[in-house]
Image (cartoon, rainbow, N blue to C red; front, side):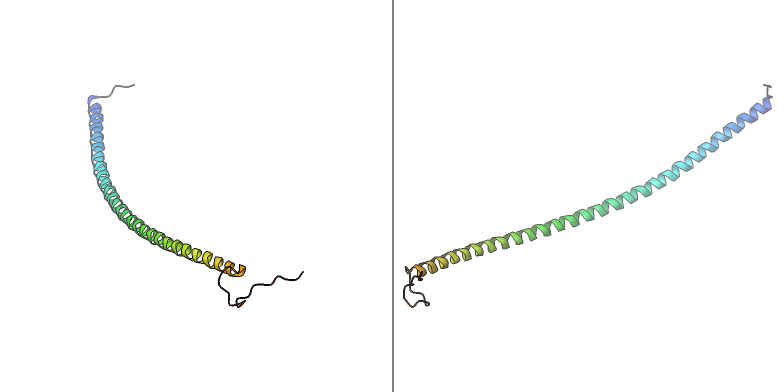
Length: 122
């Protein structure tokens, strides 16, 4: 390997320093670009967060509506079951009355005009 002259070595050192300075400038530029981009990404995340908050509040409204509907249905079911029980009791009472009339225990039915039923011939 041949020895380089002082001028060549100084020249190589100056080129190395110039390259390092160029890299420093590129790094500073890249750092600035990255900071700008990260700022844009942060702004976008803030928009997404705001949108999620809107969606969350909408879900809260939907939950409240479903709760109201559930109460309405439950109240309607309670009224329906109450009405069904009442109708069932009335039906049982009517069936009992019909049964009593058929046995002759109760008041005369309009069909038999007070007469007792005859047994069928065998």
